[in-house]
Length: 495
Image (cartoon, rainbow, N blue to C red; front, side, top):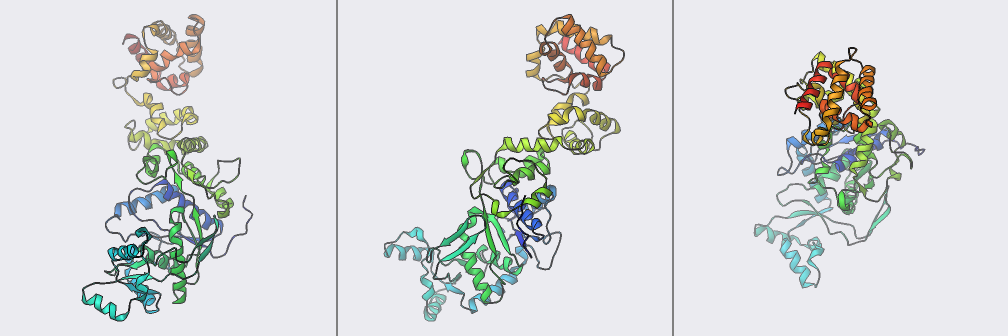
């Protein structure tokens, strides 16, 4: 467990752009920020960076809210909650950015840059340099007369931040000391020529005004950190920022083949896991393991245990690989730990979505599944697995048919003597209970025909449930009922 003392006044933020469907790497970042805030008794600010009208959408914004709500990742300030530092959508903060940019320009922290990309490339080539080096900071020295001439030509400047002339060094909470050499980071554009602020301005300004103390974000954003630190220092000088936040760059989440897991990868889609029937507890538990561990020999834990133990300094700097099999195993463990009533309530919507029961289950449907639940809970990996397991219970005899592959394996000519003996034995059972069914089938098939259990019961299982894998056989027959069981066995025999 984490014995490090809690920090006072912690404020972290989760600030996604509403583009596309929430992916597991993004939600892992939200989880680590949430756990860090809760561990230290601090606050999590949820902020939406939606200034790119061409890519951002209200649908994606609502999906973010849906994802966090489903997982139980709550926030202390932000959309749907409010707070003292709003608005929490960047599209509503334009006047704030304009004012801060003006103050930075007046203070000499920003400067007007008229150079076009082609002009920058031309200067690089003339100096015998690689054009990939980008902007050369030449406009730092543009005179007022030159600016006037450019404007007379109809050219409008972007606003760039004047980077410091010394090394930028900071202590990453995960990676230790990180240094960017002086001159290695060109002066970045903060405001477009049309006056529109860029991410390079809006993100640090919001962090400063929202009094963010710690920034936990993906490793892919590390190259932008010196620009942010330089801007924070400038914001301090004009009285906007109180301090420079501490940074922690989380390891990338990689997929198959050790490639970065991108939004385009099907396995990155968070909602695909919900649709399959991953539990929030299982999903969060697995995401927590993507770069962090509660202990060397322990993978299963609750979110309250994570909050108690979470230490950002124990997060690995190495990439984390999304392992679907491990995620499924962890989810299955959480699923087995559910109380029966909880398991039933969480599973019923999947049966309804598959058309097995009504969206609002009838009393009969609920009772039948509640009886079946103990038979299947230990066998499931995700909640949707229940559909295949109990489909046979909710199908009418007209709609029921064994799966073709299962029928081919278990219901050929060789199965006829088995089914004949089983039908005769079950027709004689008057007390339709699990013990009586078991006794009758064993006597007829194992003792009477001398079959091994696999050969004896596979035809019966497929004839009645339609699958080679099902809930326990005798209990399944009891739940299905005497008449339905015998009808299906006769149909299979005569097929």
